[in-house]
Image 1 (tube, helix red, strand yellow):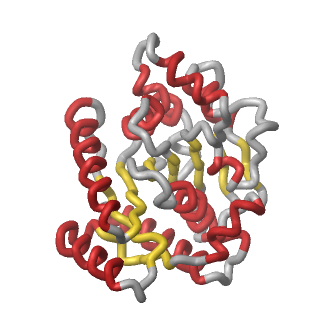
Image 2 (image 1 turned 180 degrees about the vertical axis):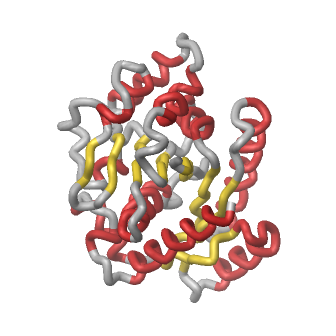
Length: 256
């Protein structure tokens, strides 16, 4: 039975997509069956997984509008080792089209239920705004992984996200919880980052993942080659950190 996780943060530019594709590749590397769902109309996670968003016959848009199933729309990325339910510009229209339909916030949950036995992990890359698309992700998920930069404004954004998760938990998805906070783009030489990291651990305790993803040039370069860093340069520090994070995720889920 697949464990479904949203990678979410209402603050933009914190590495949600980088986290999603590299965790997917890391999990695939340690022998897990993975589906990566791109819920962002920009389609960056799709392109970063070696899938051309312009060439897709079917996308997550078709799944949300129930004109295709996940099994029909998902494609296997040979280079990355996981399945991709991709997104492109069409998805922006889904926001408007879903307003009138029934069960609009549960469309993704219903679709993923059909393939629950085919995967060990489903990772959902959410857009930064709290939209109908993000809501579909949160309603489908068992938990939320929050990538965070250790900076002051990131703490502000985290408060908003925690409140959103509480509301969704209370009204739409009783299973939803924060699985953990992942410190990304971390530079231990910067005193402020170390202080924010300590604050996070003091406040959230074991909800903070042990693995820390360092600031790494190779991770930043990888998307221009249409690959996760884990595949693009497996020896890079950032790539190795994501594989370590994948192992930590598997361990943590086994304990749940």
